[in-house]
Length: 134
Image 1 (cartoon, helix red, strand yellow):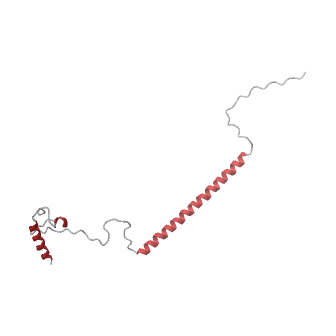
Image 2 (cartoon, rainbow, N blue to C red):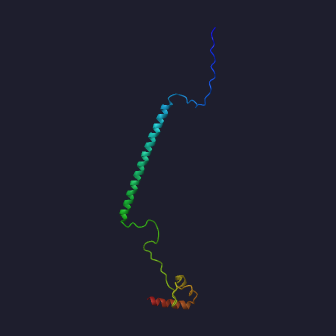
Image 3 (cartoon, rainbow, N blue to C red):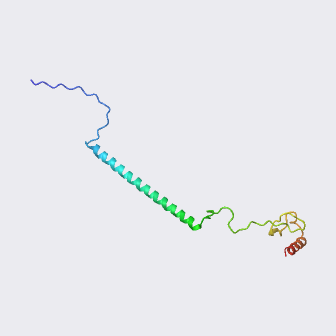
């Protein structure tokens, strides 16, 4: 009588990673990694070349600008007073003997103290100041 094979003991299940399928994936994955590395190096080289080219062009542009304007480039932008404009004149009051600053043409060149003077007074002062300037 034929002997029966003994049933093997159930193997203990290990918590292993699931099977990935076909063999030989290591070679394909290795080639994909090489391709990624090659593309990464190519792009980095291209970015570096563009960066260097841009910097050279910028430097050449700045040198040309400085050479065109001469050694006195001046300020870039609007800071301070524009060239050619004079400082605002502070005019004295036209009242005789007054050393205060006037409030300008709107108030007939009179200071705060003499601003409320009658018209005939400041007209006389104005004519006297005009004659003194001439």
